[in-house]
Image (cartoon, rainbow, N blue to C red; front, side, top):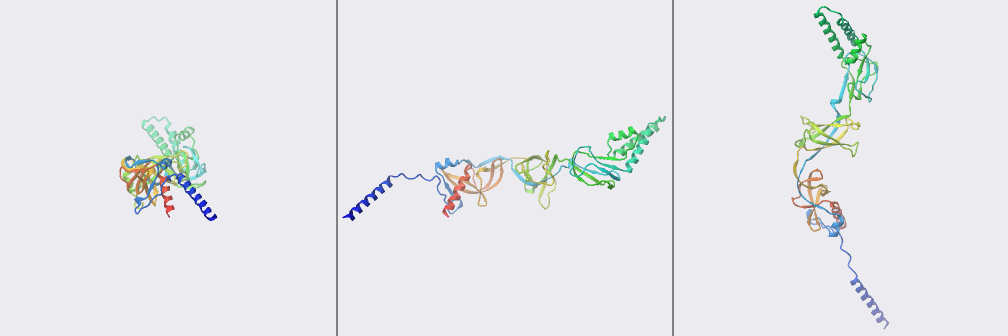
Length: 372
């Protein structure tokens, strides 16, 4: 009898449990459904509930055509601005008596660099003073007077060939005395890039003494590949970056294109002058440049935010229904002003995910891992 009573009580509890389970509300549906992968890559789909769409902030855009100025990316290096470089050579034979500037020094225009002892300079001064004295004589004959003046002017010209400024020449004539040393001066302000002499050196005419460069402006020599020549030219805007200064850009404009294609690299040189007031850009430094094409053209594509890296290529998520997005591999071209060219894999009018596309990618990968 007790056995039957216990069985009846257990049956009652079981019935109550089943009734409680039947009355309990069902849990909410998951926000993101599992991604399904069929036989083809086009069937890799992410399904989102309306709540998930709002939470992820998914935004879409239509694939279409836009006018853009293509950007060409090229390597290059910084070089001296040849208009701001000066080679100083000896204009007569002689000895370096004293140095005032050395390699690495900054000098101003006209600043003395060295004192130079030259017998030729002394001889020319003697001829100048003799011609000057003769020109001051009261010659009654006009022909003699003109000859004296011509001789004086000839002596002046020969001294000027030694790079003697007019004010120093006038001082020699005023005092009537020759100076012992020729002062070598900087023809421009800048840095002493090379100092090729030492005190006491004897040099012949034409020997290199100094090389000066004004680095407040430099030149970028960019190497444009042959296939991109139709997109760039004189006047194209450039943005140049150097690895030494991450985050900084140096804007410029191509002022000249080379005339010869390098046989080995199949590139042609594009030249850009850059302002360099702080001297950060140094000749020999490697740079990367973005060249904006001088002409605009129609390009089919999508906003750049829609294009994702996927499986060693690019892909987009195409909307195929309410909350349904299919992964589609595409071939991407140039990217300009937030717009990316699509060469294949997409048709005009198709809707792609832009903002939130990374969320779709993460859900797809997560689902794939769960299946594995």
